Length: 255
Ligand code: LIP
Image: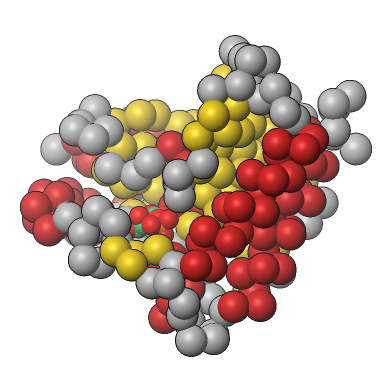
């Protein structure tokens, strides 16, 4: 049971409901496909249906809270609390049938991130965290990896949908790749961050991701003993790492 308010249970229940809706469409012919910021930034009826379901659940259970959703849900609320929802993180993977996509739901209050759920139906994995109460994978406590030198670090990144941004991102990759064990590019920021929290990655960075991509995963990482840093840029980015790796990786990414 989460805190007195049951916020974490609510978030997990809504993430699972969205996951069921998405799983029913996964692998089926895509409906309502259209592009957003670029020709490769796709959204489908599956994204929108999942966000509508989460938004309905939040409006019913937490009518005074604000909501920010990737596919357009936006309300200010009056409670000083805000839910941040990515109904389908890893949209391209979902559309191509690649089993690396997730539902990310986070709640923030005046002190920062409060609860988080990253739910991966394909992998049958649900990550949860509550401020001050640790991070769990399917109910079992998880921690970030032990300290490792940069040369032994397995790190992940991602790339923007815009060609100009990607050209700049490849320069960062050019600096990082020779200096670390290896680089992974899974296609879902929420899963990348969850995997840092669960000790499957030593670090992750990405420029230009949106709050709904990283809010849930950021709390997973810090509650699992990791560190999070916003990276300056336009738009800004995010870096997540074990405490020992934060400075070396931040220096390498910054160039
Ligand atoms: C995705 C991010 C990922 C990034 C992709 C895409 P989406 O979010 O989670 O880290 O590399 O380009 O932005 O669009 O699937 O919700």
